[in-house]
Image (cartoon, rainbow, N blue to C red; front, side, top):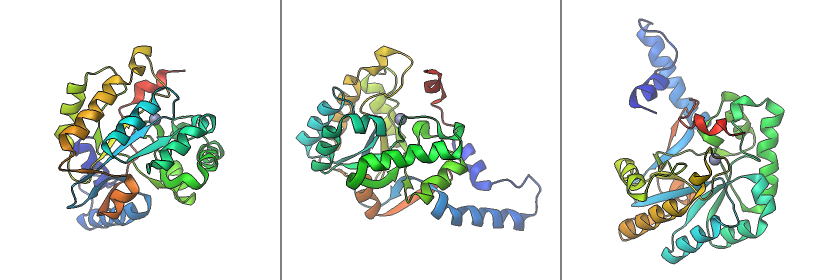
Length: 261
Ligand SMILES: [Zn+2]
């Protein structure tokens, strides 16, 4: 989201020329409602800590090498898993939990939630919560970063905190690690939440499924920053400071992914 789009969201609906008092009231109302309905995008903290997050898994070939890599560096991460895959590969869910990683809900089979009717949306959340069982961290990330007010309220009613990101690797294409690293370093700061994919649940091109560039990017981050930053789970990061919340209802820039059948 650009700064202008962000400002537009914060400014809310009053048209230009509306009474300044109304504008102030709307702004205040939005900022207060962000506590309940906002989406966490990063944590404001003085601690040198970061949260790496991995969506769309687990996958029997793609996920284990990443878990090995995180183990080698003693890094903790957060996995937003697809319920259907989690049910299919329970041993990977057990391994993530045993290694101290956090597990979040990424719906049952990765639809764009605003396109679904209420009961279908709620099933997407509930079925995945059921599979995660005691391993749930109570976090939820909407596929493609897309949510409507309805899906946001569903998450609230299910007791799930919605977590998106402030730094994005864009690892759903075939960019080389140097390009992804430059993209990450432009935005990275203390308390950042970084979006990666341990696998791709949907893709337009099979060659994008290769996770080696993502693994190389993560390894470089761990090497470059390991002596200055701690790599922690999202729940731990949220305990280290004040979660920054946005009203996040915009269509994301990941629209092309939905062209996949
Ligand atoms: Zn996803």
